[in-house]
Length: 322
View (cartoon, rainbow, N blue to C red):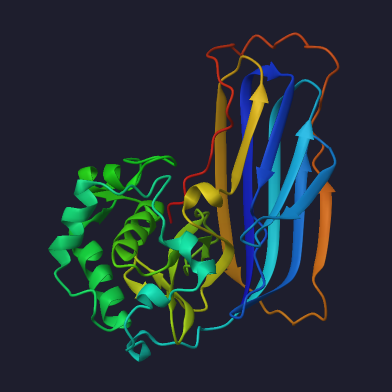
């Protein structure tokens, strides 16, 4: 399947800010299940855009704006060829690796950030009942069934920095929360697992905007990394596009940054995915463009309909919620 993904977001400020730094993780990765044939990134106000690969091999772009501005816009467009993963859940009959776990996987057993090791998480784990010596595929399916029955998909009840404890207390949330709880339950069973940031294509009658998505991968001794979507309680297929891997959301937010100034920030974001007729390319085509937004050497007079309020110094982040 060839999927085109457009991810656009804009920051608006109710006062001019003097400096901002933004880091982006919006470029899909090439993996055994997907190939990236093109990636276009547009940023405004115009500035130099740099990139690096982080410790999880995620492609990260970053830029700095050092003149006065009151808005930032980012637009990313990707063409990705995806394939259905080749490891069915039922084939994972081996138990977890246990003490034979390779050193490189131990980071993915650690609790931290939004994945909290609490009495609430331990109680949820006990409620599942299945022995930790059961076949790996059976354990993952049992965890998925528990989360699916116990928790409700609900928008606007959690935020980008909500924890597993928040999700347990509220009883509802978005894909980011479902993924974090699945990670916590897997780690209590000593199953290495990681957070996946990306996109899910859903057929719609018209070209409607959506949001980014999150799911998990767990490591099987005989199957390697295997994907599972706890929000929808199912294995991952060719409708999913991987952008980044991490221990949890804090490792792979779509955007993260800071700014200097006394201003209130508003973030608007949307994602559009569509199936396209595509041809596999020989090499990845990448392009960086500019969006023509103004900057100023000095603070300009504020138009009458813009009111300065609030104080903030950390850029808003997008919660993954599809």
